[in-house]
Length: 365
Image (cartoon, rainbow, N blue to C red; front, side):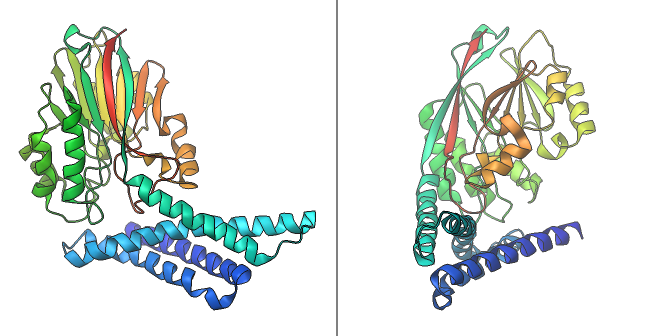
């Protein structure tokens, strides 16, 4: 029932956005050409059933339909912003008294929206590398100068699948990490060949280990099968537990438990972290940060936010997560690194954000 309500809310919001965009287009560019935004709107609405069916069925047709419908959602988002801009500019023109006609405003706003969407598609396909120098107090000598790679939000599903997994894994392997951290949302929730998607990661030989915790999307699907596939690729799944590697305490908390204060505290209490030694926490979302700080965690690695992917969603992400929406930040004695992720969710677009693999260079305080 709760899921049905969420779907109803999403559909209602989409319908309101569609009406606003189509009416704005007709007002500024003429009703005869309103078929263009209407077509995009219909395709965007198609993303919802395609995504829902993808959670239940593995069908090549769904993958064919997933990409254009997801792109249409992105186009609709940019068109909505363009529509707002049209009415704001029209108001300014009236107040100032500049003789600018509606078609010029419409073509300019919607043209820029289309250009932003095309750029967003190209930009999201480029994988960059972001580096952080991580300074931890009492870091063991065996970790000083070591290189870690952090990957999150790959979102393997009907939009990006085995080929993308292979591409990202090859980039990670080329970096030659001493340790690999995968901070959730390896999968998008759609039914895919889990073993085939996980297989490329078996080629990464990180001497100090490869570690994984689930993200919220990993838990949309059959989590046990996902974890089994990743273990088969040689990745250590941290099942709400702590391990010690060369003197560094590494804790992993799956997203479902990390979102519950009581359960989150229980896992960290059970870990019995030594506050005189450094510790690293894998937690998909950069939230409930006072809890790891309370238990003396030195560094948390997170993803989830995607940094919003593109405006105006980036504003929403900052409103929810504040400064911890992206980058290296600190809360008390806790350092937090939040990645924008290497993949995308929904529209495969990025504007003012980037698809990234994070490289960590460890050093002692």
